[in-house]
Length: 89
Image (tube, rainbow, N blue to C red; front, side):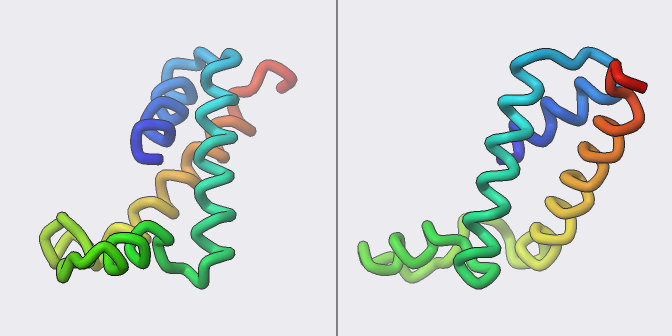
């Protein structure tokens, strides 16, 4: 999801929209829908716990607390750039 958001953000800044930018935005949107549908928890965390892991994430604790907020801000920024820079404007 991070790579898709970064790519769409780059496309918005560079004003370079094409089929790949829309595909990346679609992947990020599906990921958001799955995340929200799972009660705002990553579904892979549950899978990893069933496999026996004790850690819920590989990120440091200080970054884990900000991950959701950063992802939301990046997604909102991508959508705003898409609306602002899209060719139909």
